[in-house]
Length: 305
Image (cartoon, rainbow, N blue to C red; front, side, top):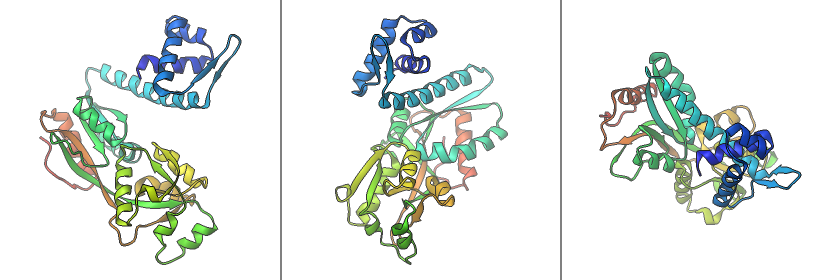
């Protein structure tokens, strides 16, 4: 999947025309068509249905279009950020929980103290961030599980925990009123899971092991790679999910989902700052890591070098 393919898809959807997409991207129509075809072959899904008289975006095409917009926007912001010669840019890979729920509270504070700094953020799952660090794409990363690679340092900086969330209905309200709600009973409901590569999913699997269960024992209703999607599916009544307490906080407080704790089990999970041990960190990257650690209460491991 390449940026040029995503730009072609975004242009076709925006202009609802291959001709206008080609004009605005200064490409030929056959080139636009080739980009769309390559995307469809890679994703094994039909994105655009085109006839001589009409053009229709499939549901999968609209879904990929939304991802494409987000990716292209992030890319363009990073390019604009790097175009400023007076800024020290930090290339940060962040998994879902840090990206969606921690960066919005810590980056404004960091920017206020270091107004000339620029943080180019790329969201991925934990495994994707680890791969980016190993490939040299990121200066540092925020991940939801410790990396196994020996040349990556992982410093715990924030402690979250996993909880179970359910729809708000009479059955779950009745269980919620019990002093010790039976988690195994709750997990007999349809379950919504994260996709592979997620630190949240890995921690959820460990909790299932503590319960003497595995994914094979669950009735899996859906899998999603986005916490917001999972939360909304639970709130809509599709099923229950094991999720980060930090991620679920807003919906719990709004009364849209019910929150159940894993009583008697260790549901804690650390989030980690990660970087390459075999590469010397730039001074502004070291400063950024120190700031993050101090902002979240100084849960310090080794000082980044």
